Amino acid sequence: MATVNYYTPEGLQKLKDELQDLKIRGRAKAADDLREARDKGDLSENAEYDAAKEAQGLLELKIAKLEEIVGNARLLDESNLDTSKVLIMSKVKLKNLKNGMVLDYTLVAEEEANLAAGKISVKSPIGKGLLGKSAGDTAEITVPAGKLQFEILEISR
Image (cartoon, rainbow, N blue to C red; front, side):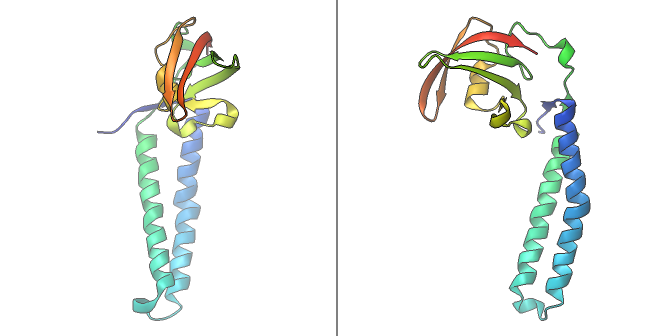
């Protein structure tokens, strides 16, 4: 069963652009690599040809996976999001109760996650721990480094 993921218009467009690039440039490069390797002689003893065939197979797998993701993607209408609880596309202001540090995150689909930009996946431990919580709630989240406690200060879109 295919998984439905929700994306911003920008995030979905980025996936579509990547898919298009792989189909056009990626396939052309794979074909060139195969042609070049084939020209080097006996295919039964040509490691370069085997490597090019394997790379082509991996490229086709990646294209198929992206096609499935794009096919099952849904756009989010951010204007209709409920800000009373944490959902995908919520902007959340958190306070780490251990060290007092205040953090701002936006919960996004896994493919859009970018920690440097403050975007965390809803499938990450912190994302999962925040989903469904309201402003003022405390979320205790188990991460690889141990347990963290966050107070949810604010939820917005």
